[in-house]
Length: 175
Image 1 (cartoon, rainbow, N blue to C red):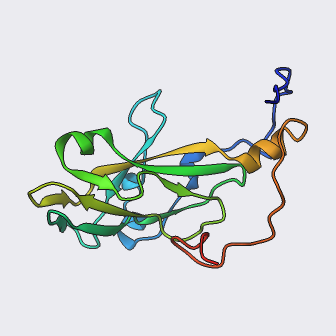
Image 2: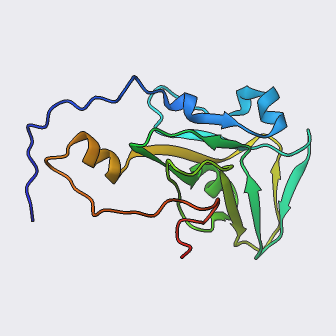
């Protein structure tokens, strides 16, 4: 096991980076109502709450027991190359319903430019209704291995990769 040098110099991003500016509204309703974009609800929150924004005002989504529903979150992300985003189910959603994010954690890489989507599964015995503008998911950000190699090249390295993303949702694993 290699020991890390604890005297790492202070890393510097190209410019100050605001995670709030990473959210790009793409659904017409979010473009008109940016207050529904993901946001933090406390000073020390590490995640931004993500709302279900229906295509039309007041609509809702019902997920029958044992079934899943694919939802478009209405925004894309413009991430700095050093970061990845992690999409999770909110603890409040888990507490009051039987919904799961089918892949447990959605990993959104900086080269993914399509709509952020989620596949929700109802493992319960009753239908689940998600109402318009309900906070269902949360998103947080993490320094990526690529970011570590750029910021601390003497301490971290990655094997070379020559492939580039050729599609949208779920495309990085397609050969």
